[in-house]
Length: 101
Image 1 (cartoon, rainbow, N blue to C red):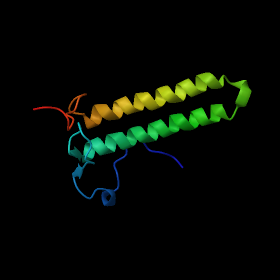
Image 2 (image 1 turned 180 degrees about the horizontal axis):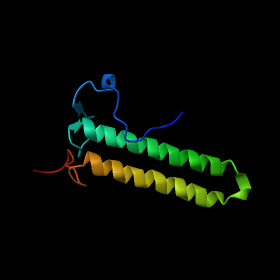
Image 3 (image 1 turned 180 degrees about the vertical axis):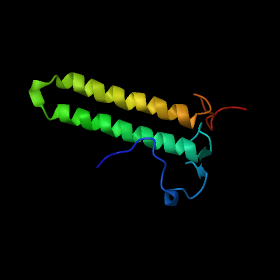
């Protein structure tokens, strides 16, 4: 199966232009279709990189598995930062119920 990056989604996949987000503290309550599309493109790229890492894992002792594990962690961390750049958290700190006003 070929993955076509940057391709426009099929019209049946777009039900609305804004997506109501999960109620996660510190994030915007809605996301635009373009934000969702670019992150979905990133998810495909991430999956391709992780599948490459899976191939390296399957090579066993012929490949330094510690470095493969570090690489996988760095891929996951890197893509998470890219997704956060798109979904734009409002800040790094949130209010707690025990905070005084």
